[in-house]
Length: 262
Image 1 (cartoon, rainbow, N blue to C red):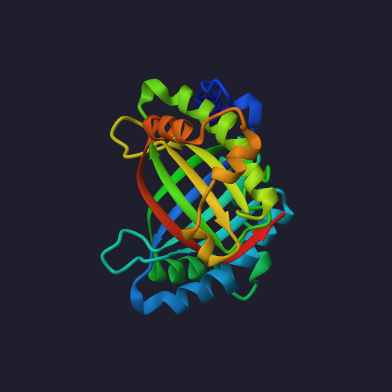
Image 2 (image 1 turned 120 degrees about the horizontal axis):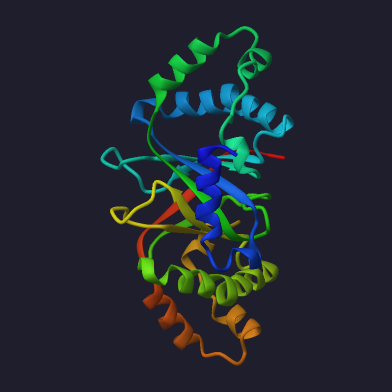
C-alpha cells in the first residue's frame, strides 16, 4: 500500500458513522475559471475532445463518472465559473487516473501536447478537492444526474464532526431518501473533505441537493418528508439542532452541461 493510499484510508476510518451508509466513492472536484470570451470554445473543447476520453476511462474501469457543471450567477470577479466532478470507486485508482495511450486512441489525429495546450489556453484550474462520499441517495451520487445541483459548503467544529455526520446520516439521510421517492428532489449527497484539510480551510463538508426542475431549488421544504420518516420528532427542534451543528459558509447553484457514467 502506498503512502498516499494508506493516509487516505486512515482519514476515512477515523469517521464513526461511515459503515452505516458508506458508498465507497471518492470524488475529485476541479474548480475552473474560464474567461467570458472563451465560454463557447471551452465547452466545445470539453464535449468534443475531453468527453470521449473520459468515456474511454470509464470503459477501462478507471473512473465511475465524469460531470461538467456551470456555476449559476458567477461573473468575471468570481474565483471560478465551471466545476468538473470525477468519481472513483477505489482509492488506488487515484494514483494513476490516466493511461498514456488514451489520447492517441481516442483522437489519433491529435497530439497529446496539442490537446493540453488548447486546454490550458481555455481555462485555469483554480483549486481541486478530494472528497469521500459519506452518504448519498441514490447510492452512487449523480448516477442519473439531474439538471441542477444546490451545493452547500459546511463548516463544522472539529470536536463535533462525528456528531454532525451522525445527524446527517441517521436523521437527514432517510428524509432525503423520502424526498427523492416523493419526487420533491432527485438526489442528495454528503461529502467529507480529504484533501486539502486543516484548520485554515473555510469548510470540511459539502452537501448536494439535486433537482430536475429549476424552480425546485427555490421551493426546498423537508417538513413533509420529515413528518413521514420521523413522526415522533419535532421538525423545528431538529432543524435548530442541525443549524447549531454546522455553518453553511456558501451555497451555489450548478447547471449540468455534460456527463459520462458507467
